[in-house]
Length: 321
Image 1 (spheres, rainbow, N blue to C red):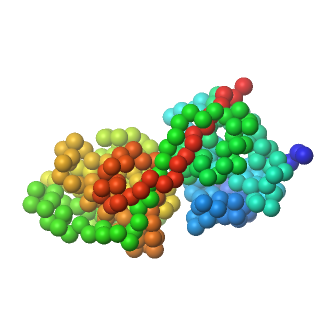
Image 2 (cartoon, one colour; image 1 turned 90 degrees about the vertical axis):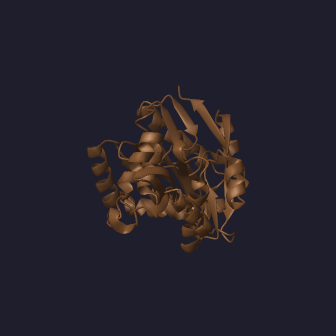
Image 3 (cartoon, rainbow, N blue to C red; image 1 turned 30 degrees about the vertical axis):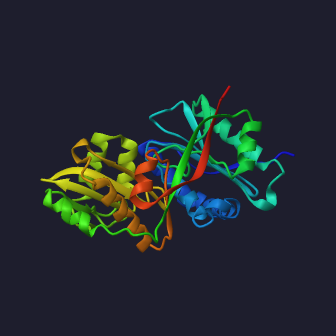
């Protein structure tokens, strides 16, 4: 059975292209986004709380990203290519309504996404997160049907990643730690409001988000800097006007991360304080648990807040002929 696939939203990936993409999206794509959100909410049962909002999140990526959203009755796929790796195409979201599953829609949508990626010059297609604007590191192993579909289409598993879950009912107090840090000349602040929300940089108690974002870019990379700039919450430590470390939450809706500390801060306990302050924000926002995404240091998060490894993701790729 064949299924007609249509494009309902896309962006070219340049500054001008992003403006055009936004205009087309608001004029033509808003109804499609709403429909796709309904499909995602029904299909993504492991992400039921925020599935609908994830479609909108993917439609607001970095300005240099090329992306598309394709739909068929009861299904949606979103794909993207980053300027930093123009030969790698990512399938960012694939969702088919439960009432439409088992009829070939997922296969048709992946095929349409691959055709679009080829047309954009991609040489590989990946079921893997495309930082900084991504939903998951790969396919959650519990979405077994999606993993089976990928393998049946010739995708090969090449890596594994995991999230940790922090129970936000745990003790997140940092008062004693803050006093200890102050004796060492270290102060901890909340940065200003995120980019694009109209509140400006003055909403926090520190010198502004741009200062922290510049630190992240200098010490890590532009992906983390974008996340720091757009995160719902951002905390940082500084001494004598120099940023020592940062932690963010809500860059990917509902999740914690990224975070990092400079060599000058290591051993001071700065990371633990920044982590706890972010998680306390998430609790105040109504969350009962927080996903720590694409985790590296298991022991740090386990010791700092009792986080446990939970969600596991398989990363897949295949060559595009």
